[in-house]
Length: 459
Image: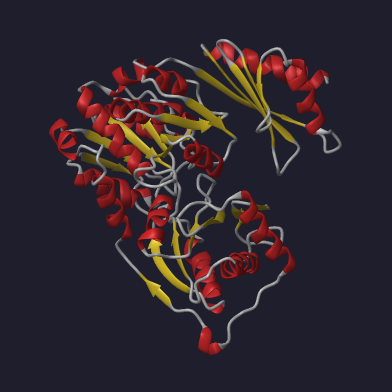
């Protein structure tokens, strides 16, 4: 069905034909390429890699292939088993490991799986490192170890609990205030590892937790991307249970969406806005999100006297710009919270702890908190093109058409107008231009998207 090789890892559907799907052969090839890259770029004579996975049905098989391939390269493996993406990111430096692999296809449906690759800091590989891994895989330039030099495989349990302990120790997480607030929360973890991590975190924070789809069996009960149209059940259950809010995470727990007490969406874009509002109220500093994220983060940052910057889309790009600007918090508008005091990775556990602390301190409802932020509306559309169309030429023309406006070309073309914006990006895997807009009403956002689409079609 599909196999996508990129600088951030390899992603595909299970079964099928080699080099077309994520087959065992492709899994071994890519794990070997990553292990070979580590050996070429490390001064350590014996390397260690942390491996963890979400609850996908194929996860155990893929994990076994990855772990044994690394052992075959002479690399020691610490298998933390069922885990979350941020938990593995935390585990890598805790173990003084040389890298990490997270086996997860994030928000993709259950037939997908993927390998996400980390460096020795527990952060995603940069573009150059990713290209180097792809080149090794393409050339099949591996050299496996002889029998006396094989790596050692070791299982290590309990890392989700260690991760929770690290979150609660954060200075801006006020566990006592959260306990005193006596929150009642409904959790939808789409039957993946968030069903282990989020209820356990809430228990430590003294929060009453109603579990919905928290059994980590990999049988996703609905589309696992935490968007409004997929979250009708938790919306109803929050109202029925008279809960204070609902918490939704994707299968690998790096995206956080929230549901208000009346069943309405807090808005994925506003998860980061609320957490940033809290952090900036305690610590002066700057923020970063990507070009496709809401302008609301800029507004909140400037309200607290900080500076906001936008990066190219992609977590590694956000992290790089956060480091350059000494940002105290950042992330992506898809519900990804990056809080450097914890680590440089999107972390829903950190997001939950910061959000509940914010709510407890303010003593307001989830709905009232959402109403306190600037109200923006987004439209996300796409234009499907024939393969012979020169997408780059179209984007250059669109940038030229709006050269009298505030235009960014660091990632596609983004045009900032006074009260709205449009961001055009080409897909790396199919002939598509993605058209994201934001405005002061849904109608205005949709109208702007339609206007831009018509303009592109005329070109």
